[in-house]
Structures are given as structure tokens and as C-alpha cells.
Image (cartoon, rainbow, N blue to C red; front, side, top):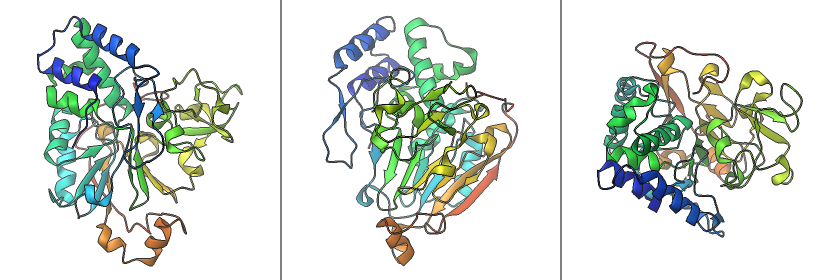
Amino acid sequence: MLLIGPLALLLVAAAAGMLSVKPLRDIIKSAVSGLKGKHTVQSAATTTSPITVVAQTPFGTPLPLMVHRTLAPEQMNTGRVIIVGDVHGCNRELRQLLAHVKFEKGVDNLILAGDLVNKGADSLGVLQTAREFGAISVRGNHDDKSLAAYLGWKSSGKCKKKRSWVKGMGSADVEALSTLPFSVTLPAYNITVVHAGLIPGVALQQQQLQTLYTIRNLVEQGGGEDGKGKGLVAAAPIGSSSSSSAPEDVAGNRWSALEEASKGGDPWSTHWTGPGHVFFGHDAKRRLQQRRCATGLDTGCVYGGRLTAAVLPPLEVLLLSEAFRLAVAGQGDVTLEVLQAQLEFVAGAEVLEPEADGAEDE
């Protein structure tokens, strides 16, 4: 069941025509102003004190009530876990992939690694398919940009051509995007799904939100193409803006996050040794990435590549494996082999957008 915060409700109301367009942005600005320093968010799995946050995402959309979502076994279906990489509006390929893996509604679990929308031909169809199959998704940068575009259009009547599809969103679509968390964790599997990645050695709740959906590379702090850390995002508590926090905000952190891989550094996943296994997307240029403790599933479907899924057996099957039980208990690495994961894919039917160089993820 999706949880909706008060700011998200404003977006849903606007989509349903219950709120006039003109004052929408002013109302949300006022609400955000009133919440700053007061709004709290707590992961569903944690029993620690709530974290005080600024109630906006890096793209200025309302922060979801559940920033980090945790799914216990009793909150999941009893079948397989199927994690799909960046869909980017490729609804035909998404449905083909689900048919290919013989997805069973009400039995299997579908998790999407973000960037459901934009670039492809049928973003609205993807949102509909996600609802139809009961998908759970993390928030990608394009999902958040689309929500921002919708909010801007409702407020000003202006919308860029490449995001004009947002004008067709209904209340269910707005609700879906506005409630997307930045991570989904399955403790019973010891896996986490994020859109882009994580900085090693920094706790999930201390990761910058911008890092979670834009990181591609890591550099030593003070590194980068000019030796001054240009274009870097330091680790910082949830709610801090990407420009306001210094690297030393997290004690002992040696890394800074870099979105543009061409500026230097290494793929963040090459340095990830746990805890757990991370499934991610966002990095289509590198296509499938298979690291010991991280798997990148963005294989560039919208660029004419593939749409890829990692298929994990039901938990009851994995629990028969001693290697899995030990890894989940922290006594070994959670690898694809330990997870008994199978990688499945379907080919992109056509090139829907040319693959650009550099900071192409606009």
C-alpha cells in the first residue's frame, strides 16, 4: 500500500482537478516552508529516532513520507523477486520481459530500479503496467524530474516538449511518482535497490539523496578532473542539499560521488563490498555490471539495447542454502551466486533516443 504525505496529496488533488492551478506552487512553497526543520521521515524498518529533513527532493518536489522503504517477508508475496533495470518509457519491452520470465501476479514480487519514465514512447503506459503488476519502484532522477515538470506545468502552464507527456498524467500517476522512495531494502534477502548507487562506508540514511539517484563514479575526496572535486556530491544526512554539505559531514568517509564518469574516478560498484548486495540502474553506458556485491541492470533498452531483470528464487527456496543463510547473517558476501539469481532480458525493439556523451542524463 502506498503512503502519501500531505504535500503529495496536493499533487494528487491538482491532478484530479480539486485544486486550482494558479495557487498550487504557492501552497506547496508555504507548506514546505512550514515543514522545514520539523518534518521527519523514518524508514519502515528502523527503530531509531526519526531524522529531521528538508521536505524537498534535489529537484524540488515534495519529499515522500517514506524516503527509504523496507519490505519484511510478511509484506511481500511468497514467490520470486524480479528486479528490473531502467525502463524509460519502454512499456512494450517491459510487458515482454514480464511475459518472458512468466511473472505471476499475486505470487511474484516486481521491483523496478527507477527511471520508469521519460525518453521512451509510452511513459504513461509504464506507470499503468507498474500498477497492474503491483510493482514497487525506487525513485530515479527522471521520475523526480517528471514530477517537477508536472508541478511546474500545473503552476505556470509551461512544459518542455520532451516532457510534454506529463500533461496526460492522472491522479494515480501523480500519486505513483510522488510516493516513490529513494531505496527499497529486503532484509530477509540482504539486498537493497537504489536507482544509481551508494557511497561505500556511509550508512544508507546518511547518503545524499542526490547521490542515490545520480552517482556513477567515486573519487577520493578532493579528486576529480581538476583536482578540486568539481561536480562532486559529498555524503551528508538526508535532507541536506547537494551544495551545502562538505565531505567531512560523515566521519571517516573517504569518497565523493561523481555523476559524470568522464571526469574521472572508478565505478562506485567496484568499491562496494557490502553490507548486502545492491541492485541499481542509471549507468546505461556500462550496460550490465556484475560486481561481487553489486549488480547494474541498466542495459540501455531505450537506446536500442536490452531491458534486463535479475530473477531471485522465493525466500523459502533460498533458505535451504547454507551459503545464503550465512551471507544474510553477515558471515559471507551476498553475491549473485549466493542469491541464485538468474539474469533475463528482452531486446529493445528500436532506438527511441540516441545515446549521448558526457552528462547525457537530462
